[in-house]
Image (cartoon, rainbow, N blue to C red; front, side, top):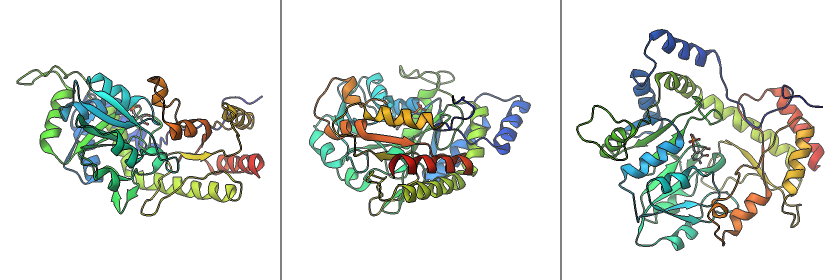
Length: 359
Ligand SMILES: Cc1ncc(COP(=O)(O)O)c(C=O)c1O
């Protein structure tokens, strides 16, 4: 029987002495709520993306909603998004009263398919939410050619590039998540970033309800605390080493899986990958709908927690048909634990399990 303490989790945050020192300093300071440290974190993230500013909020979901509202998107407007992603972008679109228009993915990259996006566009399309899934940039060059304002969703991907351009530096707005298992973690938290100062000013007004000359009906309390921001800042210092460790582990997994017939993560020409998730596709499931569960169960029996990387495709929530690649991804994609805090011993146990499952 495997106990929780011996189970290698699907993901675990990298909390080190620097994070604890940063959090302790804020606690000792007596200034815990949104203040100077949040501003410092906003400046740090803006510098990272080479944009003019950021507005920290409570979550990535809140950041998506604020980005949509700042762009003036509301009732009757249509927003494109992929069908294979977590529910956060869909919920944000619905909360501002806009109409979600789902787009199928490119099965090779798991990202939104630009040509399917073009076919879904109408004169009412006001924005496209572009999540960069699993650590790989979407095809920003093709998506820019659509001529629709892009909201880059970097909740899963920081540091990846497309044609030399870092994710988060291209769209009209960029959103991040600092949830516990994200690339940078602060427990919970999010941020909206942009080069456009007027959009940032609108976002600032939306995240708080007080000390404002006029009331906006979309304003509420979405403030991040200095305590979270201090952890985020300490993590930002180590982002380069986090990505390096992720890439190293990914190379080891690739070697262990080469020649197995599994579909390994693709890195298209002109792209770099940062492996927020190491997602393979199982090609030997036949037409079995629940074959993944058996594989997940076998790994669990070896003390390794694998997961479906997206819980449920969005078209299934909306009871829509015609998203074959999202469906195939949902049926066959498996996420193998890969995170910077993974020890060498845990990595060795995973490598052994990969070889024995698929060699
Ligand atoms: C692509 C994507 N967008 C948005 C979010 C929402 O972020 P949060 O959990 O901080 O609300 C997530 C979280 O899983 C995500 O993966």
